[in-house]
Image (cartoon, rainbow, N blue to C red):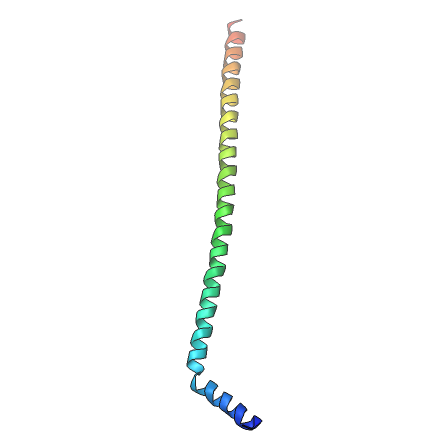
Length: 86
């Protein structure tokens, strides 16, 4: 077998099976994209979890501030009432 025949044989093989090569390449590309999507989902899930935790902390802090504000309002109302009575 000469180098010319070997190269021609390889080219003929590629010409006759191009659709199979393209299909396998497409499947590999699709699988790679799916794998990349899974890592994106995991990253997004961890971000959502951290945002939920921060939201819970903020809600707790806002609740505590609301209680303090209500207490201050009550104190101001008591002071106002005491000043008006005098």
